[in-house]
Image (cartoon, rainbow, N blue to C red; front, side, top):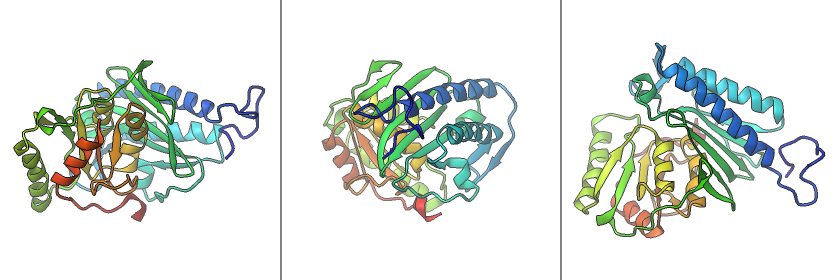
Length: 292
């Protein structure tokens, strides 16, 4: 697989160099630039519309940031492919191939963003041969930059991240998100899953409105586990690398390997915790991302 640059530069990747170094650097700069735009827009009036449900929101900032990120990446890496939230909502195919692929959530926590609730992030993941290589997530208001590279560790503002090693549910803080479906049957399953974990004596269950930042809290050891039905590959791609590189586990809710397109996940600091939660919760069915 070729490195990020179309042609080798003076310090290129030939001879065992780092093939994705430039990609990581560009992703970091774009995340920081997007964060500045989002911080400014938080204080301004917003044009808000809906997508799949009344709770699935999108703003002009989502579109602007996504277009900015993709336009810069296309110019620098014209052979690469892209999966991005708003492009997919507009009808672009969400298919992960062996090609170098950027997986982008321009504003994660759009509902928070609309209400000026400050838990908002931009997420940029990168995969090659269907293998996640690195992830960059920027907490826009707190200016925390989370990064992870396969085999090279995970960091927040250059501080190494380590997951919790808790295996006992009775000592665990668990994070989740509600998802866009709010029909009575779905809400019953969602609340039932929380009830099961609380009945298992978990310390608590938290919903913060940003899947990517919830997963970053897990990577930093501030929470012990996370599960969700209804999140998308752009919510999960960058965070998966960060969690794995912080020593954590990311699996399917069935207990099997993660399927990035399945719209469901359990993540935890330990495999024991992840498997316990996978066995406790009931499935909420969502269409796969690659079925759009």
